[in-house]
Amino acid sequence: AQLQADKEQADADKLRMQQEQEQMQKELERIKVEREAQEADIARIQEEKDRLAQIEADAAASQEAAAVEGLKMQEELKKMQEELAQQKKDLEDARAAAAQAAADAPTMEMGAKGKLAQFDSMFKPVP
Image (cartoon, rainbow, N blue to C red; front, side, top):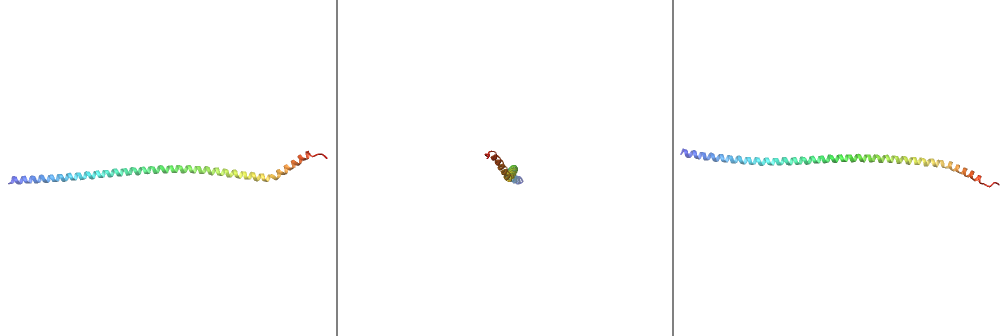
């Protein structure tokens, strides 16, 4: 009877240990699945981080290109302003020359009439 009781106890212990082993196996499998999910999350986070870094790099390059373009436009505007100032000066010089010519015109006309009269007198028939 003791032998039978010991055998039953051994069978019960064996069954209990088998159940515990199965439980540990299930726990290990759950931990493995959880770990794989975490690794997938980490990979997804890294991809997002890389994508954001690329966006930042693209934005920085775009900003730099815009700054360079802005400087070029400033240079062009400066050249246009210089050209406009030169044209304005040329126009003022031309106006001053025209005003001087207008002021000199009566004097020149009188001088021309005098020379014409002198020329005419040279060819007038002598009475």
